[in-house]
Amino acid sequence: MSQQHPNLDIIAKFFEAYSKFDLEAMRLVVDEQVKWTIPGHHPLSGTKTGIEEVMAFFGHLGKSNFKADPIVLGVNDQYVVDCHRGWSNREDGNNVDMLWCLLWKISNGKIVEVVNFAADQHEADRFFYKAYQLKPIQERVV
Image (cartoon, rainbow, N blue to C red; front, side, top):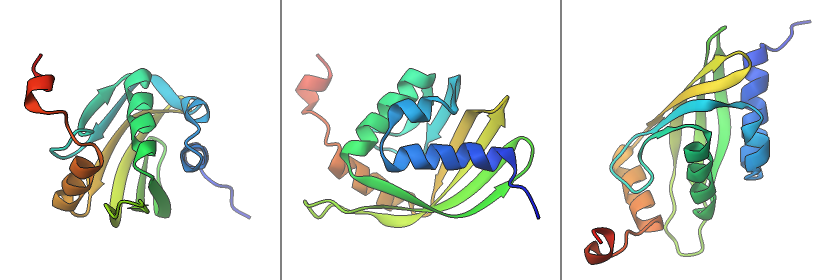
C-alpha cells in the first residue's frame, strides 16, 4: 500500500478550499511571503507578492465564477506540477474552458511560489478583460 506524498496533500487542501472560495482555508497552506505569477496582459495578470495580494487575487477571481478541476499531478520533495481544467459558467456568456498547468513550489509544508501557464493565453486574456473591465482611462490616471 502506497502513501500519498505530503506535497500532494497540501495541493489537495488548497484545491478543496479553492472549490469553496474559502480564503481562510487557503491561508492555512500558503506561506506569508508567497509569490504567485499569473501570465498575460489582463487586469488580474502579474506577480502577486505576499499572502494579502494572493488572497485579494483569489477574492476577485471568485467573482468571475472561475473553477478548477485537477486532471493530473506530478510531485517531488520541492515541487508539484498540476494540469487542470479551468473553466467558468457565467450568466453573461463570457466563459472560458481550457487547460492550465501550475508549477507549485513547496517549502516547510507551505506553498511558497506558484507560476501559472495557460494553454491559450490569448483566450485567457480575452476572458479576464471582459470579466474585469477597466475603468475609463480618465478614472484610472487620477
